Structures are given as structure tokens and as C-alpha cells.
Figure (spheres, one colour):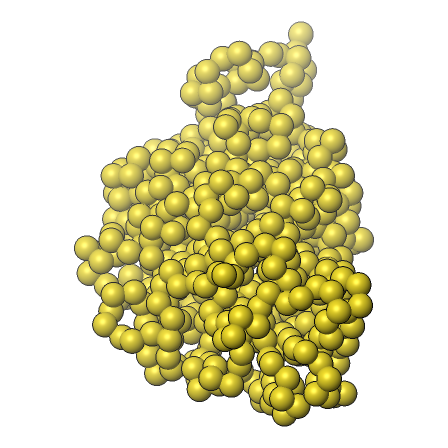
Length: 590
């Protein structure tokens, strides 16, 4: 006799790994109540849900918002937290595992001690699909080591206006770059989803988020359908062809219509025309933006689900969502066939991931978080992402031996600044926020016998006896929204003052620009001997030093057009505007 709830003893068809996934899904669906199905479609934030909630409400997914982490913030704590939530899922009658999502967008960036890779704009400068696939695999191992099985990456946006605060999350301004680097999906997911360290990847944000007017985050993309298809759709087509497991919808609008309610683009184009068979997830409270007023309504829930969103990210108001969706099904506004389709898609991925067989953390990967091998890979990525834009008189590469080098600037010795946003916290922050090697530390380590390296953030103490000065300047961390630059895009006064202090002693000045996008520097550039675009390199600053000293020649190429002045924004390849440096530009050493 089988006790109620003891499904493992029953050996039901959906629990038999030898059966085809479609058979298992159909069997499980036939046993599920409406409440269980709605639970599967609901994603709650870890801070507003408990393991008991997962059991009681049959929650299908939990997520960490940017910076939402257990205490202490260690890989083991994450694994323990994950397993606790999963225990809640295993206590449900059908024992359907929950799936946990995080924004691991340049490494497992919410976890202190993880390897932080260059942000996408830097990877775009490498033009190296094989390297980017390796990075995906390394990130998957670190993510797996903390239990997490779903990564809200890659961002396949095509950034068309550098004012946008998410420009650094874009691989480049033309779709071909993002399409070619969709190899990161293969790295994350592996050759099959039930591989030892594979995690579900997410192509985001569908579609047109990089094309908003004025680079306004979550704004309106005004384009013909032909242009939307030519510029913004191709990377998603590439992602679908790679078998990407999920797609996240953009906050932005297309010609005034919010993407979260756009049935044509989600159901007809993505699922129909492109043949996407995974599941669609909303962005953080994205359904709440459909009607433009705060607090989601029944009409918004219905619009989003009927548009084709399968799992809804409702971080805190998830109970309200469950009640609302149940009522909308009961009154006929949302057909049961749509609920079943959403569940079929979600459950298929859970079966393919092997979660029913292995619901808990694979602790054999926990030690890979921040491992030496992954940091070595990240350092290689930093080297390959450096774009040399000016090198008057071949001031670079620097001599390693018997040299006298002065280093200055706010980004020279600051891990937080060189990592940028989405690092430990959502917007990122300055300072020693996670273990790594600063650019200054990399320079000091690379310097050979008889070489002096002197550092002063403000440049004080420099004199004419120095053979070269390196100013490491640029932006400080930001993420979406707060990162939009609506006015000037120049260096700040402190940066300009530091550079002028160095120049005042007649010493050749090399500017290392740490930034999430091209900046407005044309008027300053004639006064600089060399310019190296380092983007946001992450934790392995030694990769910058590798190029400065010539251990490796610079090979990076601009992933976006570099403006002559901010008044040109938006400026893109082929638009007839004269750039300071064109798309694809990049010098190397003789």
C-alpha cells in the first residue's frame, strides 16, 4: 500500500528517468491541480519567501535579485540556502523541484570570491567565440557549485546609444557580434542540459532593449518591424538555434507597446517563427509596467500570460499574483490550455536539467568558485579585450626593466571600479568588494629588475625623472537606470586634473580608460601619448598589465563606434557620422 504523498515509493511514470521527457511531462501534468500549475509559473525573491512557502504554495522558482545573498556571502552559504529551498519543494506531494535563478552576468557576480570576468562589451572586443564559450563553462561550474541551476544571461542586446546605462551588457552595436558570441550559451548549458555542471541560460532582453530613444533604460524603441528584425532579432535567433533554455522579456516598449504584453513578438515570432521551445520569463515586476500604473492588475496578469510569458517574476507580490491568476483562469480570461503550455515548457526544462534525479547542490563544484584556473581564463579574457586606440611614438609597450613608472587615477587600485555594476551588489560599488588583482597590483607584479613603480591616486609627487605616467581613469560603477547618462559623457574633473598633473612634468602619459562604454574624449586625446580602452575588466587586473608591458600584443577591436562628441549620440556604423574611431578599430604593437 502506498501512502499519500510518498511518490518515490509509487515509482510513477514521471519519476522514471528511462522514459522520454515528453512522456514524463505528460504524466506529471495529468496529476497536477490548477494550484500546482500556477505555482510552477510563479517566481518569488529569496528575501520574501521561505522553504515552507515553497511547500505551501508549490512555488516553481526562487531568485536572487542583484545583491540578494545569504549571510555570510560564501559559496557554501549559497549551496546551503539553495538546498533549504529545494527541501521545501521536495516536501510537496508531487515532489517537483524548484529552479533557482540568478544574474550571473560576468561571472557568478553576486558571490564574494567568485571570478569576475570582463563585462560583455569587453568580450565583444575580443571577437573570440571559443573564448566566450569557455567563459560560459567556467561560470556554469561556479554557479553549479552554489546549487543554482539557472542563469539570467547572456544579455544579447544590441546597444545603439552609448547613453544607455546597460551599454556594457551588450557585446556590440551590430547584431553579428552578439550572434557570434552566443557561444556563451553552449558554455553555460553544456552539450546536454543534464551534464554535471550545466545551468539553464537565458537570452535577454527580448527584444529591442538596446534601441530605445535617447538610450533611455526601459524606454521606447521606435523602429519599423523590418529594422527591429534586422538589428535586434538576429542574436535571439542564434540563441534559439543553440537551444537556449529560457528567454527573458524586456521592460522596453516597441513603438509604444510594452514588450511584456506583446503577443505577436512573444508567441507568434519567438515561439512560432523562431521555434523557441523553452520557457519565457518576465523581468522583475515586468508585468506591472504594462498599463503604466503601480501595482499589477488582473488585466496585466492576463495580458502577460496570454502574450506567452510562462513564468512570472513577481519578487514580493507573488501571493497576490497566484490569487489573481487563479481567478483569471476561473473566469475564463486565461485558458487552461495556456496554463498547461506554460507548465509543459517549464517542466520540460526541469526534467532535461536532471533536477528530478539530482535536486540538490553538487558540492564537487563548490571549490571552483574563484579558482585559479578560472582566474587564469579571466586574465586571458582581459588581455584579449584591451583595445589600443592611440600609441604616439610607440610609448607602449613599456620596458619591464630599469624603468621608472608613475601610476595615478581613481581606477588604478580599485577592484570595485574595475568590475563595474552587477558586482556583489546590483549597482556595484567602489573599493575592495571582492578578492582580485587591481590594475596597479598587476603593473607592480609585472615590473622587472631595476624598475620603480610609484603610485599616487591624485598624481602628487610626480617629477620629470619618471619615464612614463599611467593614468587609470574613467567611470565608477553603475547598473541599469542609474547608469543612463543624459548629459555630458566626458571624464570628470578629478580625472582631468590627474591627467593634467602628470602632463605638467613633461612625462609621456598613457591613459587607461576603465569604462562601460566609449566616452567623450576627442578634445583631450591630442594631449595623451597613448590610450588603452580597458572596458570593465573584472577581478583580474593583471591582464591589463600583460598588454601594457607587451607580454601580449593588443588584439582587441572596438565593438562599437567611438563618438567624436556626445552630440553625435546615437552614432553607429554606417550612419554617415564621422567617428573618432570606427567600429572594429584597434592598433597593435609593431
